[in-house]
Length: 596
Image (cartoon, rainbow, N blue to C red; front, side, top):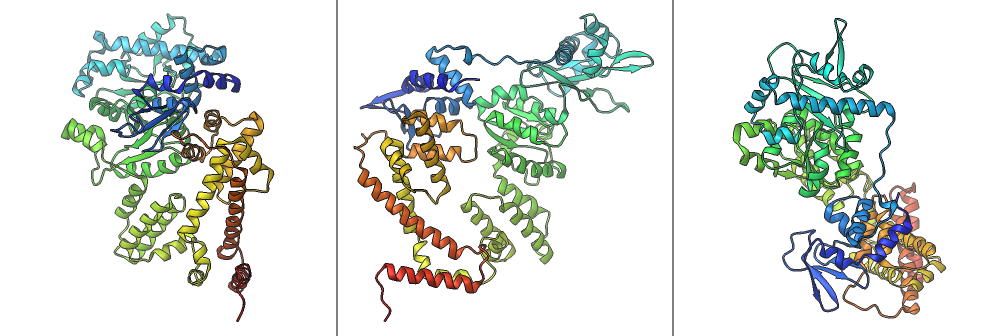
């Protein structure tokens, strides 16, 4: 584990301009530096780099951070990997930066030794006279030598005994071969479970062989595939085919395709896409989702176009959302073929276009349920509406939710207000009309909301740039009604109380290690607050107090509005009307309004 002190020392020794210059061309412009931003399709240099603050900021796409976040986002690696990479660039060495030694027990070592020796043996046999039939099969499937080597394909001798004898000759025990799932007893003789089959080795993230999937190459009554049994190193629900290669390729390509089988992965390889994995005919699991998250790229769901494949995508969506993974879905439309079938029938150009036909998960869910429900009938509208509303209950993007509701309303002719009621956003009576006609509507106007946000932004900016502002904020009974701002203020206060200073580049490191759903939004707010081309003026306590007073006033308004307009606060309509009247009376007195 890398300690906080080492991370801080690396950050302080690393010059952000020098490190970024090892990745992209950086140009000096006045007192700052600029570059073409690598995080969006940038033509004019919109990335600005501040040597004094040791941060970067793109004024076009909003990307920003410190030296670690740049390397992390550019190479699509974890934070600790980025720390090690920066240390390597600046020539900083320390024992804590060494890759952790992977520890496995003796049983696991023995099983891995057996499996990896078997993998090498099967690869060798494929290139001998014994493997001619398997080689011919691969040629018919247009699987060339480069693919055979890339995927470590092999063949198990058909007699079933010679492979076991060869492995025993390498001092591998019967017990280890049994635990590895390689042998089975046949008439008191140990034979290879995969005899006479084409071998697809399965690897873990360390590129160690952990099992096999073996395909028959002749037509007979045997099962099409025989897979390794569960062992200390293999569990089908925790394996993604080609994951060991995707770990490297995904960082280059910026995405990973998730398919159903080996042949789909091969088909994508044939059209130049190496970043793909297959779930091997089993259900996509939470463990699979965690594996995909490690890749830190956009996932592209490409299960088969038939009903089981599309239903599988539907089941994958909540698992990917739970892990916070960005993903899109390949739009099959009315096609029921899998990628391998598309390649064979229509060729590589059509498959490439097909793979780039991507839609959002919202659009996929919409299309999926619309195909399966007859919305020309009342029952069809009811079922379809309930399915979409159930999905939208977890939708945090309110703009997107409104777009979906409008589309849903257009199709079913059911009003958006009715759907909002289903979502629990408004009540079943007409009380919202009463509030909109009152003075409360003025207080919740866009201008008021914008004013409140500006006040919050200004206070946060002062706290990030002046240590005195942090102390002044913390000394009073100050808070933000907006949770994101309140969380950020608390992180600032906590960081300052620990470090007794506020260095923006080090604070970014502090935020980067926070593992929650809002960490990226918090970092974005920090970057937005920084003026890379301006010299920050001297701190004014009077100005801070003015902002804090405005914040308190807006908080008071917001709390009153919540108390009055929240339809879920348990009050009756009469009680809500009374609260509204009390608020209006208080407002009238505050503004000096007298009754006539």
